[in-house]
Image (tube, rainbow, N blue to C red; front, side, top):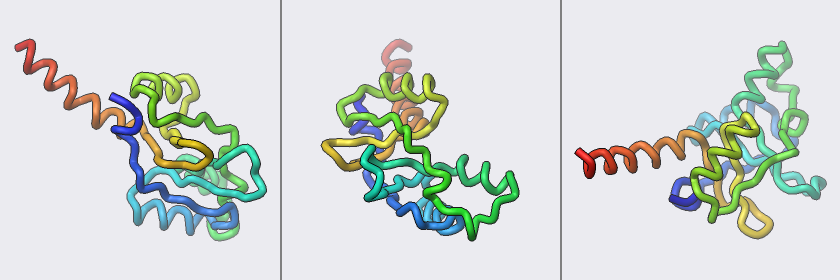
Length: 134
């Protein structure tokens, strides 16, 4: 199975000036664990803000109404291609210690794939294999 089959194509995008509270509200409303941060000044591509980034900031006593997404965005991002296998995506996540990959096709994000997406795809596939064996 490929990343394109598992990824969410409803990508939450925010700007670097969004506060962490605004980002958290949007993420909660969409029921996603990450937002793609698009910054016209960043020539390296989109960044990612995760629920872990917000939790780290709040846990450090920072004000989520004052802290911006841009200050907490990961910019050295590993991107996935839609044509990657789920094994390749899982290996990149495991190696990098993160749970989300921005999926790029050309220059822009076309999706986000998470560990949860991969598990959702793998479990039924393995159940089907078990049914064929048993």
